[in-house]
Image 1 (cartoon, rainbow, N blue to C red):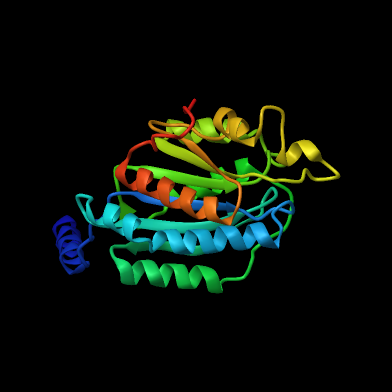
Image 2: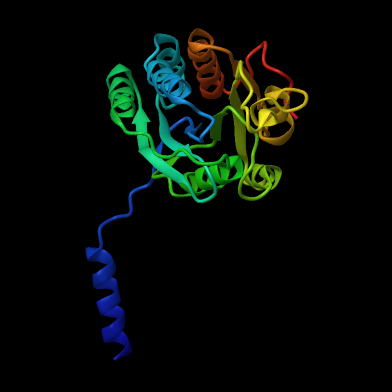
Length: 244
């Protein structure tokens, strides 16, 4: 009986399809965009169009092609209040102009996910979970958080950040500055010391981490391009604030 069972086991293993190794990429990059209530239609459009244009920018594509594998994998998600996180575009390999353009087109065509409170911690936790299930393999894992306010829902953002850092994940930030403070909570988008400093102290972390700021449509697009090139090349932009 034992020989019979062993024979069956060997046969089953021989008939099983081979397990494919995960495709190698140079970077796993989660683009995590804030769509809370303080993000009005103009800021929402700014984020969507900015990321769509940046991913297909010639300089970004050149940085991708210069990598060892010549490709990265990107996931775009939107986050708002506690429990409100959604994948807009799941893991997609970017290896040239065609895949980058298709990614950008899908992003522009997708509807807005939420308009709730601001849980940066929830966005980070959700992003970490997506990195854990990525069908690609990479030595570098990065979460790219863009937002216009402080964490006001869910658990403490520094706890979420520190847990991500212990997993070897780098978190970078792109803050969207608000010219007019919110009437009902002016310190949400304009905290003491500024939103850039808030992100530097509470949100970003990891080797070479950085935060950039955008004041308008033009600066946002350029900031995204600069940030993506730095993330892909694993280098800090020369004019980025010093990370924690």
